[in-house]
Length: 318
Image (cartoon, rainbow, N blue to C red; front, side, top):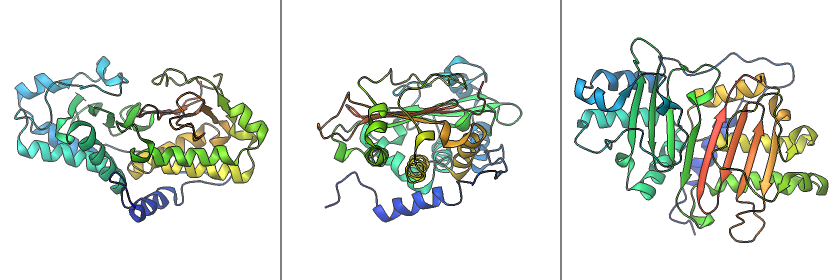
C-alpha cells in the first residue's frame, strides 16, 4: 500500500531517468558548460518579481549582493520577515514567487518540495524570500528559505559554485518510511550493500560531523570514508545512479552544471563515501546518516532524527 507521503512512483522513476540520461561522459570526452543564465526561466521570473516591488517592499526584502545573509547555511530560517502568503505581497507577486520555485526545480522536484513545505510548515506561503543585488543590471541572487528549504536562483552570478551556493532540503517526518527523502538513503545504501568487507570497513565511521560543515576543502582536503577510485565499474555505476537520483529534484541547467563541475574536478573517482553508525533509526543497518565528499563537493545527508540535507558544489580544486 502506498503511504501518504509517497509520490507517484512512475512519475519519480521517469523524472530520475530523465535527470540521468546522457549526463555521464566517457573518459576524454568534453562537455559544453550548461549553467543557468540571466535569461533562464527562473531568472526571468526573478526579474519580473523584482520589477513589481515597491520601495517600501524593497526596504524589507532586498539587500546588497555581498550581504552576509546570502551566504548563511541553516536548515530552518527566514531570510526576511514577511511570509510569502502575507498581505505584504500582492497576489500577482505570490504567483511569480511560486513560478520561480517551479522553474528552479524539475517537475518531480516541484511536487516534492511543495509536499514537504505543506507538511513541515503548512504550505509554501509560510516561507520567505530575499533578493540580493539588482536582477536587471548587476549580480543578483533570489533566495527562498524556511523550514528545511534553501533554494537559489542567480543566473550564475556566483561563478564556480553550482546553485549559486549551498542549498538545503529536508523533511520533519521521523519515521523513515514516511520521510519523502528516505528514497535517497535507500539509494545510497545500495552502494554500501555492493561494497566488499574491506571497503565497508573504510566506509563506516562511528560519529557524524556537524551537519552544516560543508565547506569545500579543495585538492588538499582530508576526507573520511572509502574512495570511489577503489570501486569496481559496477560499484562506480551505482555511485553515478545515486548522484542522479539525488539531483533529480532540481532543474536541468543546475544538474548539468553539477556534472560539469564534477568532471572539472576529476569525476566521481575523486569522491569519498562515508556512512555513520550514529543515528541508525531502526537498528536495521540501513545507515540514515551518510556523506559524499570530494575536493569541490559536499553532500551531507542527516536522516536522523529527521532529514536535513546540505549540498555544496564548486568548481575550483585549490
